[in-house]
Amino acid sequence: MLESFKRFFASQGSGPDWRDVSEWAKQRGLTFKRAREDEGFVIDGAFDGKPWRIEWGPPQRAYIEGRELRIRMELKLPAELQMLLLSKPLMELLEKQTFEQFTEGTQTQIDTATPEEMRWLVMFPKLNLGGFRVLRNHFGAVASTAATGLAWIDGPLAHQLERALGGLLRADPPFVLMTLRGRTYLRTQLIDPDVNAMGSALAIFEAAVAQALKVAAQLGEAGSEWPSSTGSTAWQSLGSEEPPKYR
Image (cartoon, rainbow, N blue to C red):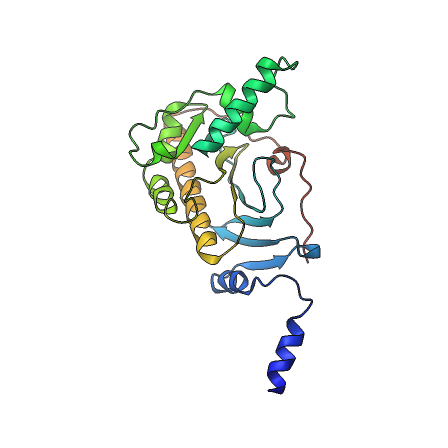
């Protein structure tokens, strides 16, 4: 009985209970840290020897409400390998906002203050997802080159996205997956960071990373010459967002 009381009082004031997530990370050899003031957490890990980071906390995009899950990874991909996949409702919303901002408003050109996911909808052609019977009803995509964009989605990534439609991506929440300045990013609305959702997001991300590396390798074998990646921090360029501090 005494030990029960000790455990109870020890848990008071310790912040939100993310023990399941912490244990999930520990079992996979990942590092879990809480953000200051318990606004969220960060998990650090690696894929194929390259580090990646998961962040969960307050959203850094206006189109996401509640809480947001973000994953990013530096891959040193060709700088012009620019590919973007979004949930269909989000794509339609951003297209509407872009049209209103640049057609009906006073702004006449797209500048760097506009998030990439909005700019790319104007800059790049839409991908024809007609060959993806399930995905075409839930996602939209654009890419600097249609062939590379479709090759990225095909196979393992498409399979993981289809699986997530029964869980993490059920009801088509705001979801963004993209390659930008040599990096890969995932961003989605996630109110409750349960371990099933975390595992699903990570599986999608790892498939996206593997496919991006495969596409980049195929381009290299074809003799394509790509400019080197820029030195800017793409995660920070995706809007005015301060990196969270962790303890």
